[in-house]
Image (cartoon, rainbow over all chains, first blue to last red; front, side, top):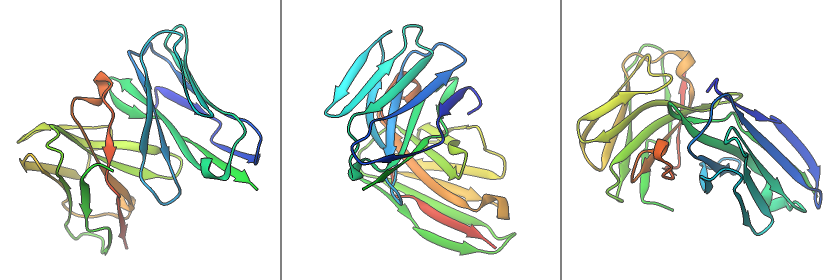
Length: 108
Length: 115
């Protein structure tokens, strides 16, 4: 929706490079979720962040919730071809909204 | 993957015809959602249901109606399809509302083309 900005829209990286996508909200959130969608697939839940300043890790993925709970980021260290897909943030901006997503291409 | 199926998986229809998409779940989750996905717009909520016969509108509900007569089934109807409704439609389910931080599980999607 209009209340959430996700950047960048597209990102091409060489395999082994790092990748970061950002989700910025105009309002404070109670929680934020991240999803991944492989090409031709459906969105799959990755993680949820609830606390201010929270940082969670899943192997090479690091998720962060801003101190003001108005922004979040997903960082992938040393990308692999299996990381290809679109990453969405999602959260309760009134109703439940998804960001427009960041499409990640990994060049072998 | 959660037990969610969508039917049909692909459909081509003509402008002005009615179309019904079906979502079926075996998880007994209370909440069910219909989204459409278009390039540059991400996923946009069409309608959702918080129980049998309990539904509400989402961000892009114009031109769509829904029904839920059983916990396991959530139907999306396009009363008179238009070319602007060409999209990929995803059904999702969750135990509690997504706004409360409960994850959503998605079905495989239905690709609808309106000619």
